[in-house]
Image (cartoon, rainbow, N blue to C red):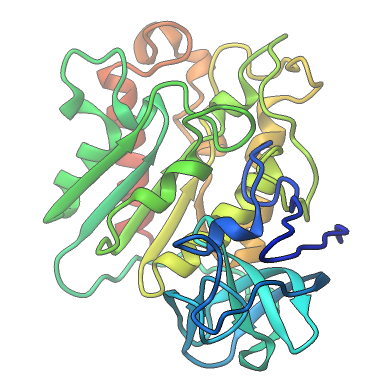
Length: 330
């Protein structure tokens, strides 16, 4: 799980690798607004590899560089997670923070411990329900005559949500080389939502004989693989919504789902990766892949438009299932 990385800030910048995206070159200076120098005048800080999963011990300021003289970029609250990739000699850690490189001091961190299994009980949200729905064409409502028939609208209407923000994009993957991947888009969502629904993975699988997103392995810290994209995005969402209910959904079964893609993986393996990474981060999962009544491969004529995209009936079934799992659990 460890990756060898070294970074110099200031005059010399060294590539961190793919930590913050699939193939995207990210340099330390990019984290420093206004040209890369801190208010303290630092021009170069040696860092060594320090790969670790961490928990924040106390509310702390997050900075654009390794020191309090750098620009503040946000706050991490007690109990929130972070992923570190590098460390300075005086204990400043470079971390993944909602899609960007940022810095905190190691004194405010503790070793990360995998949360207890998430018990499926009714979601309890104080006040108005405000939904952010992030996903692909299923979330967008592609192929529907009326996009208000899409599953997020059904969930929103049934739970009486005050706000529904749709972040669906046709063809969007969770990770990989897709330019509109969820990993790149989630930081752009509104910050005041308290129910975050994430529905992706079917385009990462892509289909029989198609390339899709490389599955990768548990512990990946690169947006180039499905596991890595989930790892970073789940961490970032936990940072972004400290008091929100974050819920991931596995893809539904559709035409050809048992056949391997070009990389040798089937849809079930992408669904399993979502379950595995969500368990690590303590995030709820609605397992639509194994949900009774949602095996669309056997209901193509009644539930799918083209073997992949749900019609109005298909979306109604998905919406009802999601709502039931969120608000009507025994």
